[in-house]
Image 1 (cartoon, rainbow, N blue to C red):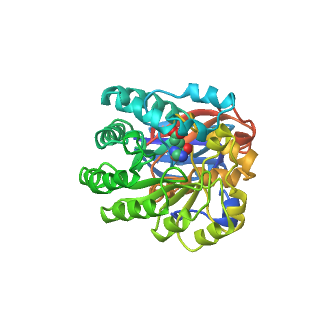
Image 2 (cartoon, rainbow, N blue to C red):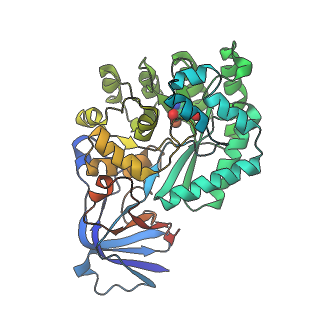
Image 3 (cartoon, protein in one colour):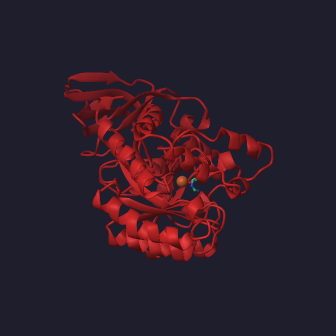
Length: 411
Ligand code: NIG
Ligand code: FE
């Protein structure tokens, strides 16, 4: 079954060679073919080029994209999309003056979501998550990472990961799972954080690895949550079971977590709203992808990750949604890309690179996703008719997407 998309006004992110990420000045380049065609065979991109070279190509289905932009689907490398219920009351509490920290300190926040999740059946959790997954696919997400971390007991963490596994089996988009057992210290371990870290290391990690329920290991490395020693212990334990580190770090405080991550060959370090010079120097020594989550900064009114500074230092940058009930109740990657341009001063080219190829790198899938490259999965967005691709982040808040194709199928 072949599909030919013709008369594409701009075909973005065309990479003849299968690069895995883009860094520094290269992020300003978004290789584009104007007046292009794209040829898909089954679930794979097999050809592209200028319309002049399309004359002899035949296909089972032809889609005319006159006036439209075609680009790879978003690769959202950091979400907590599986959760139970919502926390709109905390949102109102913050408007009325409480801080995110105040709310967590009085037992709200992550512990509030954990309580809800523990009381929710696996099927119900699956149904709630399906709604969100379908919605983000419609918004152009074609690959997604999903974390556990609202379970906080062995049973509830496994329940979350089984739901993620079901989503992976039931939906066409690429799903990668992360064990984030160390997301908050549960109430029962309030005065025994070590005991909880032991539980994560001795029970959760081995069980999850044995059942092959996750690829990545995450820790919320932050004051009041897990310190450098906890983080190091958990990452090392994860690695010894084949899980790859990918951590929450520098959201509210910079105190050395990036060094621990880089020294443990983390695939990504995520948040980075607080960043100092030594963190940047550390990132330059490794292959760890810095990931910014601008919708979280927007929602919590906290600083934006200094993405401009990271890119200007020659580093790569990825953008992700952080979709979760507490700090980012939105999985809309179009908003993420706009906000990165508006608030972090990324150019549209940089933001699109960050949300496609570099997002794919941050979930270890960039050899098959994140660019228009022969042999990669046919995961593409076709926009409505728009003046040019810069219009996507510019006209923020509107949905410019007309069609989303995943594995060559319209969703
Ligand atoms: O990435 N920072 C830690 N975890 C989530 C938010 C958790 C919550 O508030 O539910 C985040 O922002
Ligand atoms: Fe997160």
